[in-house]
Length: 275
Image 1 (cartoon, rainbow, N blue to C red):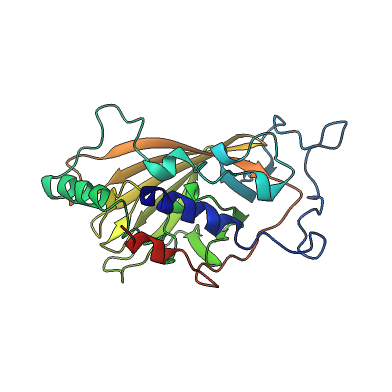
Image 2 (image 1 turned 90 degrees about the vertical axis):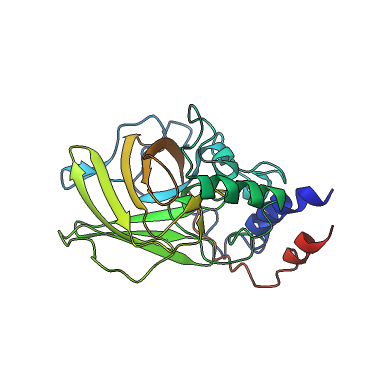
């Protein structure tokens, strides 16, 4: 049964700080200014909101698989084994699989043999984008003309996407989520990132992301309720060719983020070492 502990831990991390008084935590506070149906529920099929001539991608989001019909009881939205499929293997739908370099294929096999026990996320290290899009936690996008900020519940983390025209750094100090700049192409936000650490995981499968990676996200909001992220990874150190997958998030309304500090009373990582 020990091979289930990793999946159980990721689910437990999501639930760990979901207790307390709902009113005190703003769990049930109506989101202002959103389209609603006659019964008061959010109109998820409403047109894309806009601000300053571009789509407004601001709001709270979660991996689409984890939010069905705006689940009213957050503590029961996810079962213990119900994690996003992208979190298990982000390239599961990629025809022919990932184009690994030989060393990367060997590394992924080794990580699988160890049941992903060395996954940095399961050991409470910081989240890293793009992987954080499909964590089992909420994230909030705050959009301004010159800067887009993504706040993530896991370890109270953040990411910055600079929209002010600056270039990407030439010799960056390695970051968990890299350095990101963005611009609009019509209704699509194009985000380019580099400067990653050399030891990142893209999913529980252990697919690597290295210091040579350049990641491009093409983000669109086709309607009020959904966010689509076309993710392209160009990492010649780990893969023989660039590859692209499509991610989707759903909007979350009438609630707020929960500060979730992984190491606070964490007691589950020790299970990884039990054979």
